[in-house]
Image 1 (cartoon, rainbow, N blue to C red):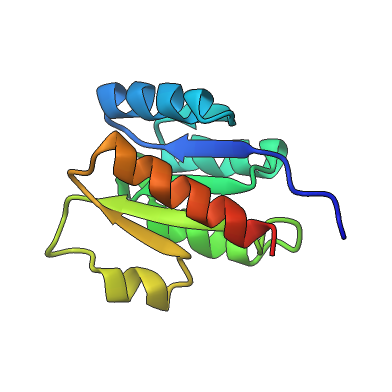
Image 2: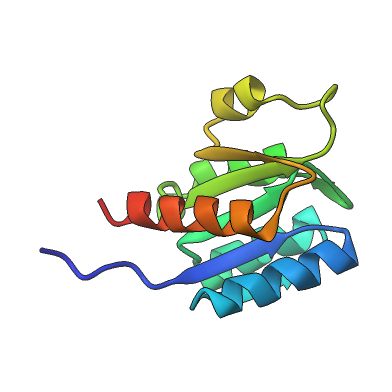
Length: 129
């Protein structure tokens, strides 16, 4: 049986309060977590940090979550990273459209820390199948 992937998680979220809260929650769940606020920085962090999981807002400064996901899916080393789209924009994004662009899961805002934790743990299990 192969070694389990590391518990690493990247949060790409422009809301400072939510970004800080999710990073703290991820750390409490045992993840080595990093967080950033823009699509540009998120892509850079993903390609250097190589996290097992990414939680990414759809609407971001310097790009958007869909663009980050498309670029990561095209990268051989990051193509199988578990990617969760987060958004409160019910008009501009939907669960179906996120799945169509190859997101692994969708987390509609607002959500609770318990919901975040459940999605993170499920995606981590999926990453290790």
